[in-house]
Amino acid sequence: MPSNWSYQRLEADASNSPTVKPYNSDRQRTRRRAIIICGSITLLLIIIFGSLLAHPKTRKRAKDIYQESFREKLTPESNLRHVIEMGPPHYNSIHEYERNLPQHNLSLPFPEGKDGRYVWFANQIKLLGWNNCFNEVLMNAHLAYASNRAYVFQDYWWATEHYRWPKDKFLDDYPRTPLNAIIAGPTAGGLWEAEDTAPRSISEEWFKVVCPESERRIINTREVKPLVATAPGGEVFHAWQKKLSEAPEKCIEVRGAEEDSYSQTFDLILWGNITRLTSLWDIFIKSPTSRLLETSPLVRSAVDRNEYIFLPHGPRPPTSSPNPWDRLMAIHLRRGDYERHCAGLGYMNATWYGWNQLEFLPDKFEAGNGIEEHMRHCWPTIDDIVLKVREARSEFLRLRADGGTLDVMHLLTNDQTEFIDKLADALRREGWFTIRTTKDLLLDQEQTDVSMAVDMDIARKAAVFVGNGWSSFTSNIVHRRLKDGKDPISTRFF
Image 1 (cartoon, helix red, strand yellow):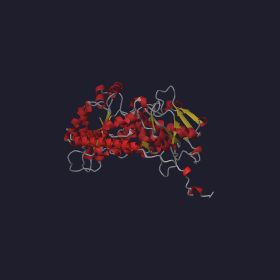
Image 2 (tube, helix red, strand yellow; image 1 turned 90 degrees about the horizontal axis):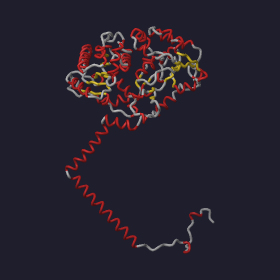
Image 3 (cartoon, helix red, strand yellow; image 1 turned 180 degrees about the vertical axis):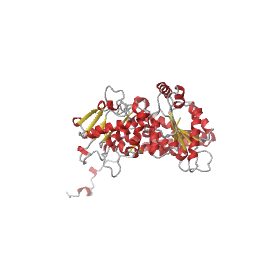
Image 4 (cartoon, helix red, strand yellow; image 1 turned 180 degrees about the horizontal axis):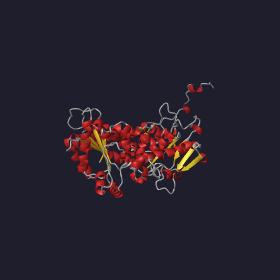
């Protein structure tokens, strides 16, 4: 047999030839009849549908349905419903980014790698609002830096009542958001300045690799806090810095004392005390932890995506800037459950919170004038708000060298009642032609998860900001605005 047998001609052999059946004419006729029937039905449907579309009312209804569907997909309300239905984000790419940070390498030289120096604040706040946590995150990160140790950053653990998704959609018992979804910079593992040899922040996951439990020294807050319980914030900072700097161990875990109701290193009592906190300002604002703090790419993408809604829609002013933020005033209106909180603050005769207490800011609050005075500043009426907005705009424009204008308003609010509609009407009468609120923002799943940081960044960029003096949300906006070099006159309080 030839080697290329598959290409050889077969010899004619009737016995090996396939049997060819005669063509079935009945089958052919049946098939032809089915084709004719189907074609006739199709043609009839085309004629009927075409005649319907030719009718003006039918065409208009089809157009209306299409446009309604189109509009439904674009509204922030329908978009939010869709986002909630899809469930919370998994953040796979951000988790992967954090996992692969270059400092997560045992081979790196001191003060990183297997012989590096690290501190994990296991007592850091969890299960509270983001801004209560954010205060402490930044101060702990700076303390670690000043102690020549790498700060161990952690996910943000949500208070479940503040989470946007219902419990049946939770991915964990307690929802968490990676820190790099909310902020960027050295605190979240980013770079220090080029000449700075300080160790870079690492993730909690990597800390458990480089610092197994057997190699950690546990420092309980009771070793330090009782010694500086009523001391100014600067003394509290330096006491902790000394403790962490002088410890010879490479791995430190700070734990809260069980008997301490506020077991954080820089606790709520410190943040609410003007005579103690403000001594920390100069230490913090000049630090690279503060100077290099940045908006996360995710938050920045949300702000960029929604910038167009802040373009002015009113009459053309004599002078204006192409930058919409130069014409924007943002005001923080915490509503809903905050009324009861405000009343409680009045009952306790509480002063303002955090960086809102800085002496060089133009607005001040003196406690001791009764609950009604607290409510006027904490839970302002529409008349109170309009009066403050008018004052803030007038004083800002009077000192602005280029004149300019303020005619775009953003209301950072959780209010879902007619109060906001009535307020918007009152503000329009004051010449605010473009008014937006938090619910007007169009956000995807991940951006919705960090929407509090999106609102904060809009307020940071605004020409003028009016906030609530008792709010940690306002306090962190104040810090970002002052860090950016904005004039104190542009940051006000009710």
